Length: 179
Image (tube, rainbow, N blue to C red; front, side, top):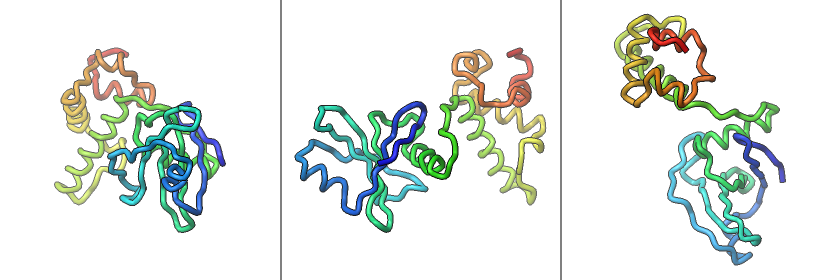
């Protein structure tokens, strides 16, 4: 068993050559398969199972199939950023990276807006948006519009936090507001 962390939560990882659900049945442990469809890098064969440990603790297991059996990541909470992010974080830690830190909603919506603007630019032009240095005033207005569609204004940024977005970008999106 290996131990990792994801947003200050402990994650246990075990490797099995047999299937985890059979192990739960053998131990007569109560469980249910959580109805969640996992996205890449996970596959449709991978599962999330909620179960009660022998100590009456509610746990969740992300069961990832691989060529030698199953990798099982066990936690006591559902990851806020999704099972895929938890899996990628643990994979990165196995390669020597530091655990991910929790991000902000502001960052996630800005990234969503950047991706959306990039897709629009790719379909309209032969020169895709490759980095933030290529943003023009219209791009920042489009980012702001998307943020506002998601209920994010200069006032709410103070509530939801923005520590993971560069200050220069923040003031380009909301130039009238002094953070």
